[in-house]
Figure 1 (cartoon, rainbow over the protein chains, first blue to last red):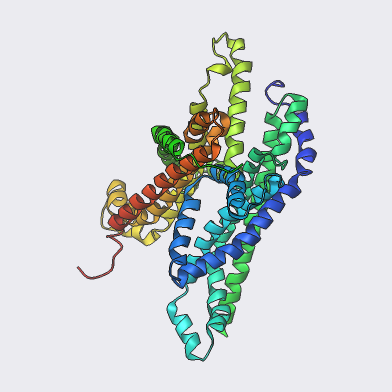
Figure 2 (cartoon, chains in turn yellow, orange; figure 1 turned 180 degrees about the vertical axis):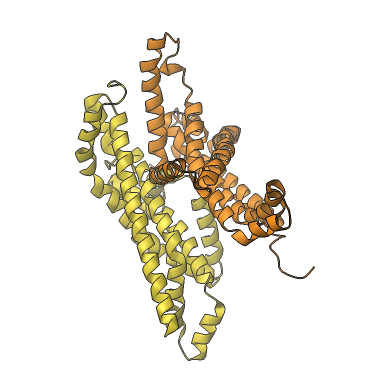
Length: 234
Length: 238
């Protein structure tokens, strides 16, 4: 049994993998923040049906959502330097790989998050906005005070799922050479000539992280849910 | 040094990618079917709260949902290799790890992955039908089969079909990860062609275009099916 799975190597792998956890979390966080910003903009472009931009956004979202993240990573990694060179005559080939990985995950999550935001805002009845206008609110006030608080409640479960899949998707960042949790396994296996134990340890780490995220969102949903009921009774 | 997009090679890669669509379908439709059967079994065990088994399957589903597909495939691949090499000589089997097909490992791995997610789809769909519907069907004298086909499925399918569609799209895109355990599918096939001339951007763009086309196609089919099955859900009078 020892030559199939070595338990001591499995335990030894944890501290080595966890020392690279920050890179994985950093990718998730940056992709989430910028993905939300760009995703919101894309969603607004499509919701307010801005001419030309709206059609471009539709194609962008459909394309990004239709290709595997693995392919997207390489297209950004190889294609972005070519694009920048052609447009601005600047050579970015020497940029850190992590930057390309971050851009790829931002592009990916902006498309997915824009869909979540769009369907959440569309899920709030038009009557709510009309009522807000009727009491004299401006467009921005109506959105911020009336539509947004209702939309965030609709979006929350999908948002939680999306962050969990984003976390799991970061496992592909190693393909470009980023030394995150998965990337460090290559280093371990070149020392020990074995990798199954390290991969199993990585699976446990990802499972725990996903579980923590899921539980956090469940709590958040509950809190927002109850808050909504209480304010409704006032 | 300016970059020159080689459109002739891009078209050539598109044709290569199209030739490998059957492999992608093998890696997505077969896991969908296997996953649907296994997933339904898991869902039924969990809904009927079979003692012991239900808790075990619930834990398994929660665990596998938290593990990236890449790790599931890699672990399965490594474990099968090490396992076969360790066990085969003991029993005098003329089987070595080199005989294991990468594609088979990927199909098994993707099927397990699909079963986990589809069990949740089936559970959601069955739970979306109120229990009064089951009781009403029994009270008018239907047996289980009649109840399932006439009452439950017509109401559960409109819930399940969009979810099945997004799972199939997830599997199509997930099949690209099989390239990392050496399965020759669209990504590896197009890359292989680009190895000699380093035109990897054309290769990846061609692969992306085919994946996109496949996903859009699935979306369209799902929209048509959805319109057909939700006929039952429409309001009005008879």
